Length: 397
Ligand code: PMP
Ligand code: GLN
Image (cartoon, rainbow, N blue to C red):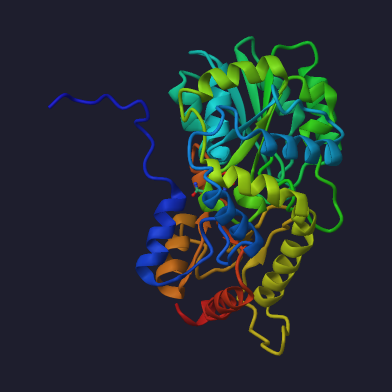
């Protein structure tokens, strides 16, 4: 049998798969991997049925069903004032994961450096490496986890090919305001550096804040691949459909790679989503998830919630300004602080019965601030059950 020389010798199975499997094995409430435990709008399911029955069951156009690209163009123009041509500047992908993979593949040459912000979403770094690139790490620091632009400036070299941007940010649940985008613009002016902007949580932004899309800033948009995911926005993460926006020259290169990764993506869901987008439900998403965040945090902090009055579990909750995640620190709990965040996450899953994600999984050096991430995209009954289980935290050890 030939010996395979791994291209990713240090990569194992993703933390999301690992923690979901453990939660399943233990029968724990799974607040680890980010996905809703409720169904999508039944109208979307009906539209899928219509699309299937209408015979939309063969290959879609390589760049995606035109009606869906047009609906995306209209939404982006309305929200961010930037006009992308549906024919040449928008491509429908198999999830944001593929869009990120394809954008990186289109631009990264062996030896190129790509700056990422740590903690960093887990798919970026392996794809940079698969293309022969070198990830370069800029650190987001507690408590606000905003980019340190002086640090980023110092990391730029003649080999810097791209910067991965991600707001609202997974896993820190921070949002990066317009100031950060102005800093980014100033930094990249007169360079040949591209931006890959991961905006899958663009509609999950709270307390009246505005999402600062890279698409809003012409100076940034001209060098950017902007990526979002229908899976997040419409509660259908399993459909794996997303889109990428980029100026024509960039999109041309993107499509050269895209056509040989998937050629095209699932046809009927594209028709269903194209029709469904006319309902504009993305506009209600922020209020919907803000209510879940508040419900979850009240329950976790032990405030009287619908008369449940759970005792405080002692975790210290970080801000969640966007995404459907919120993290908690246990550094202040003497009985647990000696545990690594992986050990603590495993303890919570196995013994307390609540699955979560250790934040060290998002650092190349396993930096450990004794913090774990929870997903609140769940039914209230699920969130309450998790809060009840976590309220036992002090009594289980
Ligand atoms: N980027 C970030 C920051 C994410 O959190 C996720 C998934 N949750 C993705 C990309 C991938 O999205 P998709 O499921 O559409 O591939
Ligand atoms: N993006 C999701 C999260 O952060 C997980 C997606 C996946 O499992 N790859 O939880």
